[in-house]
Length: 133
Length: 159
Length: 161
Image (cartoon, rainbow over all chains, first blue to last red; front, side, top):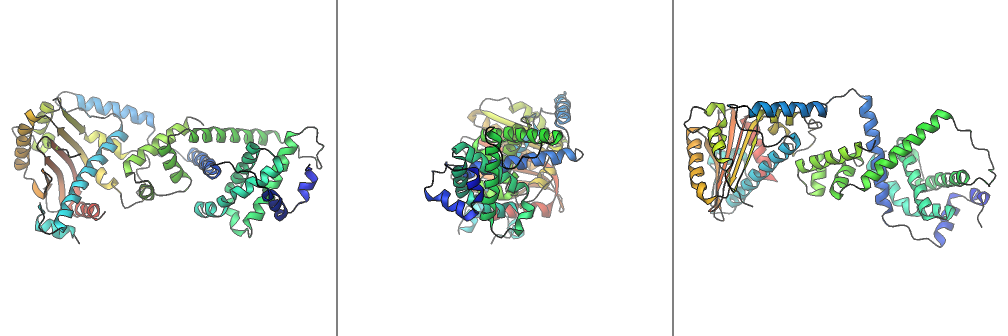
């Protein structure tokens, strides 16, 4: 039976030795849970720091109102088509998707040019400017 | 000490440390709790850790004391060798609040969808740039921005 | 998935002189069956520019300066065989009237993709991609202002990945 006193008197090396003599099974995923704990701590620390600073960004409530107003403006007759998204983040995601599509197709073009006899046409001045290696 | 270095030096000790905690506390969940407490303490004080020559010895010593404190707190029948400091009113409440908030955030992190949790951890704990995260996860820039925003929103609800 | 987008960028004010303005084409086709349409307005791009943390451009993948310079985006993606031909010809007329210059043409696996830009020597004001497959037409039109060398740098970066 271990007593508090006994434990207190053990050195770190001795403790380690005794603990690992007949080692108990370490629960799985310990390290990942520890990482989560530290992430939680960092998140909280970040939030406290934000609170301490004056608010730098556009408060979301105001942002939402602005989006609603902008949507209304755009939807007025004669003003043009209605925005497909209400949420700037979703709109942003869509823009990025478009860029991805464009970039994929450009890459196809470049690959084809690199292989001799390609069926891609990239005007000489463009090729020169983008300096395909 | 940087996050990267901290994790490289201290995380690998976690198994041994758990075994030490288990040896003292004789309970699996308690042992993990104690190790978690230790790591939080180390993490919060990581600026001073560069001068520690023997991380393992240091950790075991700290951990031992943490475990013994736990036992003393939990047990009312054991007469403490040394009387604990009388708790200071204000400090105690803050500490409890802080622990509760952390526990809530941690629960929230555990219940996040995998990709959100992964992106959040890489950004918050590891401090990686968006490009580095994109490289590691294969996600594109905007997807990971959206994931991160969703994760943060979830967690903010908890505090 | 190869998509063909029909360019309805004529919505731009600067192109309203044309008989078939982009806005009218977009509004004409955007409700069609088997066609998906996305429009992002200048107002929405301004909001995008204000999304928190967008400031931290800490990576080479940085699309932020590009996106900040955009004022409008139109995407039409049609799989409706009965309207594809008309859409394509509307788009091509728009491109021709708008004096877009061919940036690149790629023919790959039955799909023809053409990309165009419009603007001055120093500044790009618009970008169009028109991709056509037997059953699909895709059109992406971006309006905005960007220094031409920045655009070329971005293209080079994308290509280098």
